[in-house]
Length: 255
Image 1 (cartoon, rainbow, N blue to C red):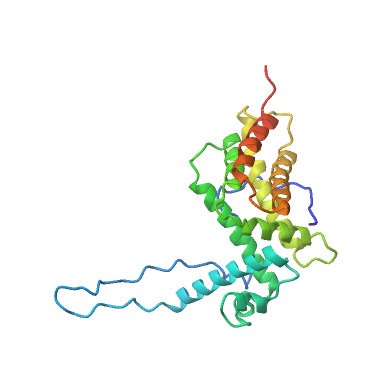
Image 2: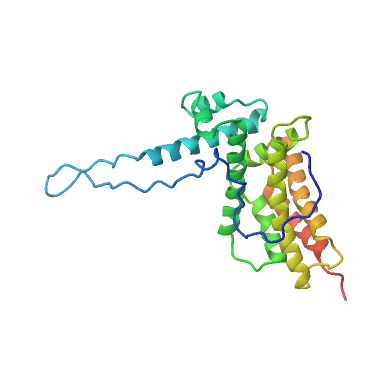
């Protein structure tokens, strides 16, 4: 990945970070289907039970996009970005070979939707975690959630690590997207490290930018090594020790 070290926008909202919209991405946002009306067949008046209400076109599209993105992440986690085609994504999701191209426009459009979904999925997990104050405790919560995800296959993490690795290749078609994604996550961490310094709970001699890079790099590096070894990643055991290490690394000097 062609990582750039520069200044990140400090005004980062504490919510899922989406990538810039494009014509292909405007139709990517999943729409939560409303539950259809169901009436039990055993009615006392003997009348015929109502069947599920037919789904709308918007609901059918949302369902298809969700399936396509899930299949794309699974394929990327197994064979990488360059080894995955739009046609294969459509077939793996149980649709036609051309549907992924029709919905996302290109592999670039699909990549944009995948990274947005991975990012939003992680920040949704952050929002489900017990509320904590801004600053150090938000950084600690970030680390805890990273190692606490429920997918035993770590599909999102595998896919993201492979996407970033392939971004290092010459003429990589996903390098720019990975830089944008990385910058947004680093900015989130940097903002809370700055707040922690202002609140005197983080060592003021620490560079917020470098500390953010250190924490994110440590999380990804540890999981990369664990996943390469295969088997159970032992994430919960890792989490306990990494949380202790991060607290110690950021703590102000005694006295």
